[in-house]
Structures are given as structure tokens and as C-alpha cells.
Length: 168
Image 1: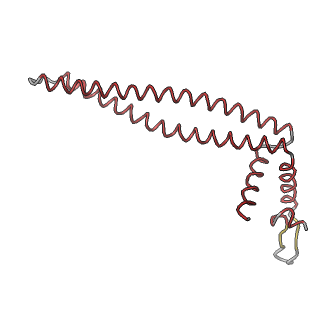
Image 2: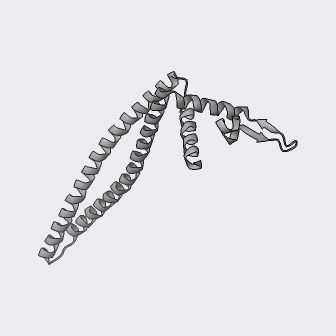
Image 3: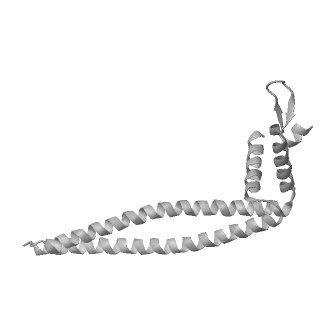
């Protein structure tokens, strides 16, 4: 029967009469999803698109974490530079202690500067990867559009697939 083939959402019960009613929008959506799933090329493109979207999401998440670390390192570097100015401005009679502290600060400053440079290089590579993935995403969407499918259709397909797998 129709309910078994297209799912629960295609039939609704009228609250006033208690009669079954056909949800035509749900039927259209289900037919489109079934047609989509049976079109091998569209399903492959949709799967690739989903993978690209997940990779973009992962890289954006990494970028947020990297930015927090980058900001923290920048703050540490500013703190060290402030301390260096304080040391050079101080008129202390214990020259060796001041010299040792300056060496320690220089070493810390160098380490943080290297971390910042590495972080900047990683951001550059991540940005290149994000640009590549975004171009691929746009290309996949264009190919899906040529097959008369939209990004919304792709989401609906994966949401329906997710529902089917959780119901079984």
C-alpha cells in the first residue's frame, strides 16, 4: 500500500471526520526522494556533496580552535614584549639576574614566534583546502541542478536515509 511504500508522512487523519487524507506535499517529496535515490549519478553526486560539506564543516571547526590558540599565543607574545621593556627600563644592580631573565624571555619569544608562524602556514593551507572544497561543492551542486535536483533535495535524501536507518 501507499503508506508502506512512501512512509507514515503521506497519510494524515482528519481530526474532525477521522478520515484518512493524502498529504500530497509529502507524497511529492517522497517520490522525488525515491527518484533521487534510484538515479545512480545523482546519488553519487549527492554523496560526494555531503562528504565535501562535512569536510568544510570539520575544517571550519579546526579553524575556530586554531584561531583561539593563535590569539592566545599573540597575547603571550605581547606579554613577553611588555616584560622585556620593563626589564630594559629597570635600573637594577643585579646585572646577571636581569641578563638571565632577558635570555629566558628571548627564548620564550622565539618559541611563540615559531608557533605563530607555523599556525599562519597551517591557516594558509587550510584556506587553500577550503577554497578547493568550496569550488568542488559548487561544481557538484551545478551537476545536480543539471539533473533537476537542488541542495534541499540532497538534504531531504540524507534526512530520509537517516530516518530509515534509525527505524530499522
